[in-house]
Length: 126
Image (tube, rainbow, N blue to C red; front, side, top):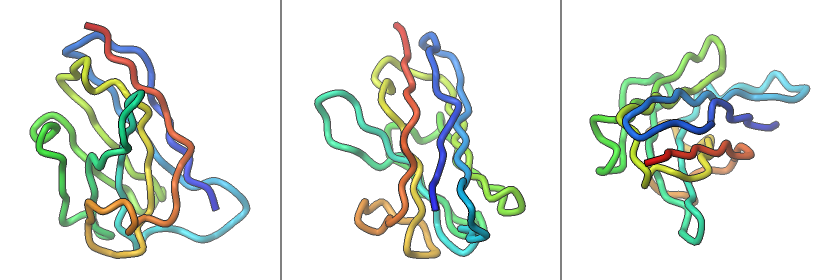
């Protein structure tokens, strides 16, 4: 099972991007019963939690610095999770990863996630 993140790119500060994450591979496994999360890793920095959403989408958690700018959502019928990013800043530049949690409720803890996507690069120019 693989998670595939897409939607990254180059955007000017103040702009918007929407990242998507879906499963790929020859499997019928879905993550509709799992919380999903987005993380990012900037050059020379540790991977950090960005946002997480519960299995049915009713609960979310966010990194404080992205609250009000980023929105995580999911469409279980499409087995896809999204990260809408608005008012982007240069410090948002990073490789963004999606991940599936072992849990059904949102988590900020990296070790709670056992499936990871390959990452998509977001570059915000100032």
